[in-house]
Length: 365
Image 1 (cartoon, rainbow, N blue to C red):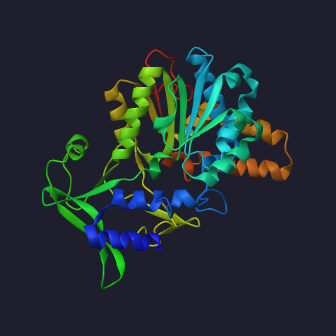
Image 2: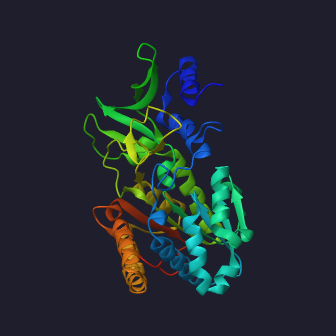
Image 3: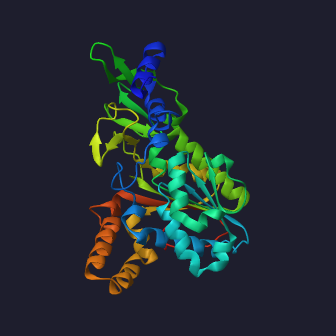
């Protein structure tokens, strides 16, 4: 049976170069060899660590945010609590433990996890314990039943495949992945110039310098449209957290991480996590066009501090041993330090116009 690199090579030889979107999609989601289909990518033994894995403080703050949001939405007796890409189930488990203090909310919440990796589904179920009895798994967001909802996506958008275009000689050429038979390796090439791509015309309404790379994700656009439409139709609120930028200034952010180290994205397809920085400016523009209220993006640091993460950390440290207190402080620093995740990670909230401003975004439109 052919390996994933061999399958990609054969496809290129037969049908021509792949867009980065096609390459990412196959590398991450191939049914037999896709990274997210067959690997356990999260945690110390995986390829990367997410905020919930760093500290319980993160999930606790998100849990409190959900409880307040439910109250701001009128405390509906039934509400879908949706997480996209829940990883090992750490964040949803911390959330469910935290909302024990709001039993009416916990009773009202139906848990819906969007996860395609069967092994991760098992880990999520194990992590949640008895709480998994009220949990439902889905391959895609489309299959989640309609109802009022709170949606969470932490480090999900960055894994949605992107396309890249290089600006040269007053035109855009798409970066593509080809296969060099002589070198027996994947390589970068440029496609034919494009002048009428609707996405480029919509999001690149300013002058660009030769050699600049512009990225966008059609899948992120489609997901933002679906979430925003669902918010209007069913009444809901979405909290999106990821590393990214407020405005696309151009640049290559396509990257691969394996065993906590950056590697060549064109090597070992299926064995490394592929991602790109999220264009929160585009997310905001798309959501506003659909007609939902947008708060943010703001930095993860500002969001967590406004939610009271430092106060919560101090309370935990006061009740902990010296070693535990050091670990709590270390975890907090990673979450909010400007040199770590605090500035790079952004938070944006989509909601109905008739609901009060979400917690954590005070004074920010």
